[in-house]
Length: 628
Image (tube, rainbow, N blue to C red; front, side, top):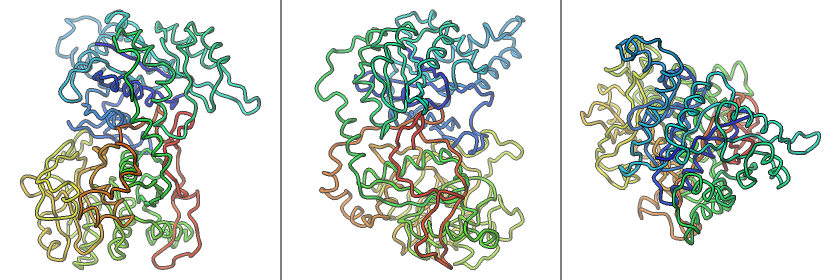
């Protein structure tokens, strides 16, 4: 087994995730099975109880693991299926050691950070690195991303563990890539190497010497700067590569390949790769990067959410929309609307926010209502669903999005005015949405319906056709509440069909509305399995309906030949990583703006303040460690 450890210096969010994923992409293209491990030095056991405002979305794996969103980016980037143990946290490590101590594992010895915590880390890495993540083949290279920056106190046990680990697995099996920022102050415009020098010096002082230094910068830096870093950081000039801000993350593996990274890793880890690479090596990536940049038609989608101040709260949803848009030949223009700003109370308190939010909603080509927890924003989501239903606007609801669509329908079509979810109103006379039987009151960690579950289709439907007419599908779930089966017959009598359910026919998994271009909602999260090569069918349907091409697609089962020709070549599964990565910009967004169904402000345009983002064309531009 070979290991590549990716560390970061100077600042967090410098791009370790995309660099780590790009290593995997390059080596996968060489035919080497890859796996990834993300280390998060926080004390939480997992990401399940994180606030979306704190760390972005919680990503759910097939086995029900609730992990950092970075693992979602690894899965999309490398098209693998990771497991909960691919995410190591300080909390998990300490819990294992403490449990072992209580069980007498250490035979009465004093349990310490060294050797017990560091040994646990090393054993965990070795164990997980051998677990197959694709085609049941044991990986040959494990890429490990160490979260945070070198010097962080919470990361010290992991750094010490890897200092020991390099001798445990032998030098020829262990490689360190250090990703560091090279800033260029506006006052001088000159790239400054001192931060990188200091970061590498600290890394070396902790016992790890970088075999590769990846310099992140706003603009390309010249050979003179690279030679300076080489001289002061004790590496050869060819071991210093630069990744400036790029127009698309799809260029990163190409730039690394051009810089000779494959040759460096091949020599350092003795991979015995063929040199030179075969003709057409990484050609699909070049085609993809070119194609993404040459798409000019835009599709405008409004995302009505509860956590829109932080774009990473909807990272997988945004990615799934991008995948579907690229497949259809459009560039995604995604606008975030704070659900609260669609509610009548806001109309009285702040009419500007209210009308701007409605203006944004009503001028979109399609609407997506994603998941969430709690009471805030629920009424706003319901109003968005009502407007979409009554005005025949394509809409996709996910998790809570399905629940609010059902409640809205019950209130306005079935005339059950007090219909509600027991999450919002425990005493409602019409509990359209109820808590799940296996929910454990009082505990919130790993108590939900989590992971991959089977959904069985019932009858004919648009969403079933999008899934190629199969009888069953497997999708990932993360929820506590579900549609009350006691109301299903009444809802279906009025045109709201539940076209997918679980094996026991008690849990309603997919809803579709009759006589509507595209009004679909799922209890599961289809965004988790979306890939650039294979967009999630529910998202593909939304984009196709938004651009007026769904009926043609459902009739023929394929996009028009001309449209496919415009796409040039097949997509390759590729994505970016977030948080400590080049992925989504984790900036805090102000809350929302837009126009109203009651009083539309003609000519008003979305602003950059107060809840709705200004029209954002999603092209995943790399900017200083983030993706804009």
